[in-house]
Image 1 (cartoon, helix red, strand yellow):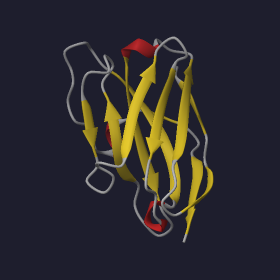
Image 2 (tube, helix red, strand yellow; image 1 turned 90 degrees about the vertical axis):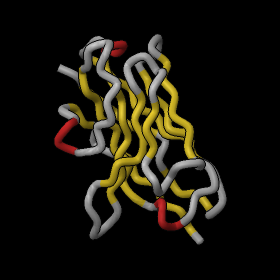
Image 3 (cartoon, one colour; image 1 turned 120 degrees about the vertical axis):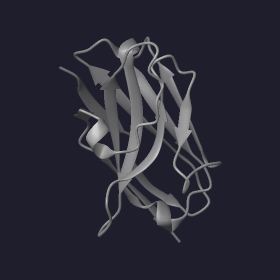
Image 4 (spheres, one colour; image 1 turned 180 degrees about the horizontal axis):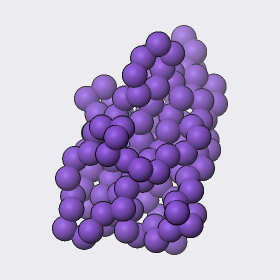
Length: 128
């Protein structure tokens, strides 16, 4: 059973940067594809980015492409989401997600239903 905990959310000025972290426990982290989703008030949960278990394949959501960097540290069992040039439209609760995969599976999983493990979320608020 995998448990995920997000951290790093907070208030930031428009144009600023923020780094989120998601730490996993209770599973073999190196076998997990990791993803980030976000949900703004009144909107559906939206795919942000994902990273394969090897760290070699990245998929980006269209709304954030070019403004984010995702990385993983297997020793710390942590995935990071570095965000740049934030704007008020980025305000949302950010959730990390995990999916156990085999080595050859580097597919794009953009649906919430594809991810069995979820954190509680961390609030990101971007002021104008």
